[in-house]
Image (cartoon, rainbow over all chains, first blue to last red):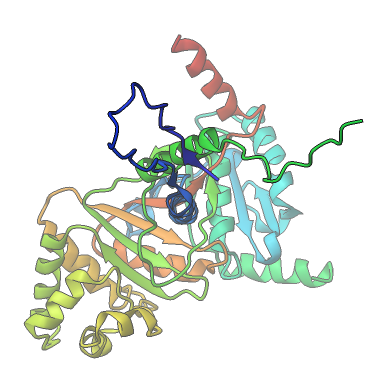
Length: 177
Length: 218
């Protein structure tokens, strides 16, 4: 066991007659309890510690605009709408016609975003994110993250329209989801 | 032939270096540790590539668990007191001083206003155990969360207040939207979403930019 050995040295010099030799006491300290406690503390700190500090992601939402004509207009050539549905499904369409929607996944959407970014005038490009009520918070953060990853400067998160929701429902029903 | 003597005692091995290392690790953990804050619900945050640190001061945090229950918490006890006193007046909660104190000490609360008094009347142990139903916020104005946000802003009276939103991976989007609505109704459009850190995927535009920044920084 862990111990300190300070070992008593030999007696130097002879004591006079009649002087009793002091009994040699062991100076070894049993360190077992201390070590036990040490390890207990280590375990405690390992379990309670938080190593990876969370990070913060900025989210800027537009102000609510009452009048329809005050809202920003989106050019048809630059619009790219991404809709998030249940089971991590992603639907997207280019331009302003929702009937052109295509289905993909979170892996596939990045290629589509990159393709759109390269084929469009950067000033016109606007990504519109529309999470359906079935989408999770993770989906939302993931797609906002895609915007950061692909350095899309202009994007907006808006509510989905009933027409689009219906289209998604039909598409999902057709593919058996 | 002389017999080989079997050793009477097991050989004593020197554990000193071992113990030294153990205590080194111990001191590392003691210094580096930051305790997990007391939270009423477990929230598994999604990861994102953003690298900004979460502000520790002047934060008003709204937590959403996987069932969409909403909780609020604040870090500064001084402003917490102003907030609860305001709410007490405007919403006629009828809280006593002891209950106000209980609110200041509570890590976070998530009950409708009509249950707040009974929740704060509990002692600390019961408070932790009780299942809080969450602050209602499912209407076009953001429900009661609207008032929480308004009075938090009043408490800070123009000073910078960081609005943090922490939600679980599997929280449904409508729950998150309700929270956003409550903030928006108070003209707050800038939020910080709490996420776990993640690296930018290799080859992406952000990855290239970050590599350039690292290169340019030399």
